[in-house]
Length: 113
Length: 114
Image 1 (cartoon, rainbow over the protein chains, first blue to last red):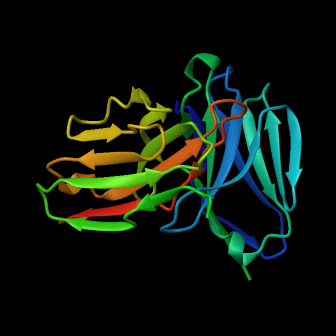
Image 2: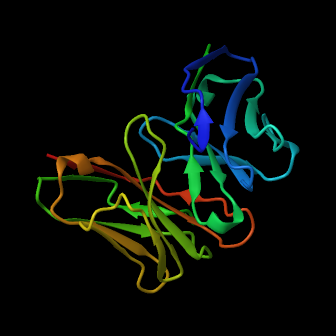
């Protein structure tokens, strides 16, 4: 089992809909979780991070963390064609290994006009 | 611009040549990371520094790869005797050492080995 897993997609949603992206992780000691957006040929751009159970909202984006079930999700409300990108989930694992992020392979999102 | 910068943005080289990339982190960030990314994959960790100390290096990194951060500010990544399999996007990121440690990426250097 990979340490951070995401569905590769593509996930296709119509413009204006809610896009839901999911990520699971294997290490119960994982601390912080990050969502990055990456456009083709560009570098990852940080969208949000979360480290407490529950929801964290920033504009159209909401990150949700459930440590008991070991998943973290990203909701994008009122999806726009410009949201079409690959979304990478990353986690800092247990306290003894907090020096690097462990990455998922990313989920491709297509928002159709 | 106070973000992470990388130079060059693109590099085409012939197999066997040496290449060097530079990364300038966000000024107050004491951690600097190097990653490599190929199409359809997440970033692959190469190495990271805290100030001038190189604290971890990936076991996947061959001896042809070396990185330095001599004054705790900018960093260089050198690849000696390049191979076609080295073709990838090389990403640099920086972070603080405290708090959630979120990393901010530079634009990357795309290396093509012919």
